[in-house]
Image (cartoon, rainbow, N blue to C red; front, side, top):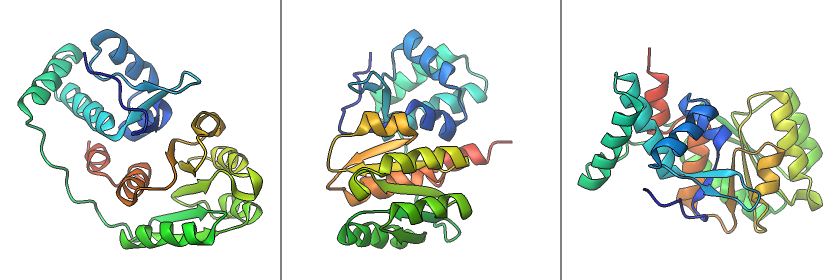
Length: 223
């Protein structure tokens, strides 16, 4: 049985994984319970939290099933792939000039940090330091993804997570120097990172949520 993911690297809620892979949450839970190959970490509140590697493995299982394998055989093939260390290196990310990221931050330096790395990926970035303005943008010009500092204006970030959920399909990456992961996920965030942010992990999380990672592209290309 695969060990649970390390809590520090487990950032995706089961709802986010379901949306990214096109697999129902009921199916993800059934795979975990029945095959014990991909076991997510649990937050203090009991919510399932998946690492990026686990999402990639779930995508592999999904692809094998879509090619005709039974779930049990797909999971056995995953175990064999692990054993043989035969996983292929990830594809280069696709640049996305049409993708807009709204960054709601309380700190100008942190906002500039996020903006720099996101623009390096080719994203259009809009930075706001006022949660009311961020709420207006979410309602009037929904971005591809929201990156929100939960402690903006003393904790208004949780309300922004809820606003993003209410307006529809705006995925949310919540960040904070305080471990507010459970509160963020309950409020509607799909992923959470603790500050200080690691640039590669930060960009990878955003890329996953906007659907431009390698395994999400495979999902888009399915007939």
